[in-house]
Image (cartoon, rainbow, N blue to C red; front, side, top):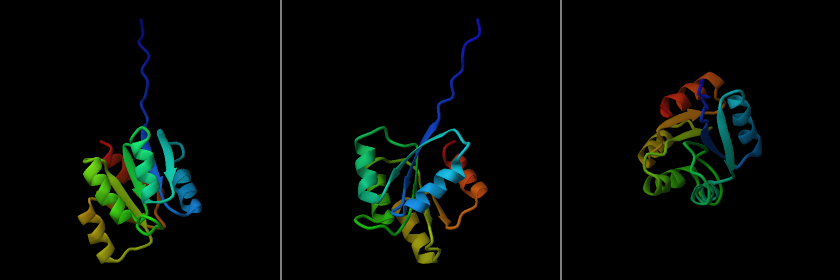
Length: 127
């Protein structure tokens, strides 16, 4: 008897206040075995995580209204230790990179990001 093997897809939460960016990230990850959900800011992300199945990875912008990515990343580290956060932002200055790392971000990529660069980071963090 052959046993059926099921592939469990990883869940990714895309957090950005711009709809176009969330759509772009979805397009970049199209064809991969990821379940994707979206949030419009850090506050929305924390609510979605608390009231649903926690994601395996978060892709998040730095600058957003209500709760920015740095503050959200710090809170994620407290509430969900080990949950990897990838910052994806236009803010490429070293000060933002340092703030993100201090907040617990595991990777920092600048927009526009290439598909292969994003996939390599995600797959590395999901190992």
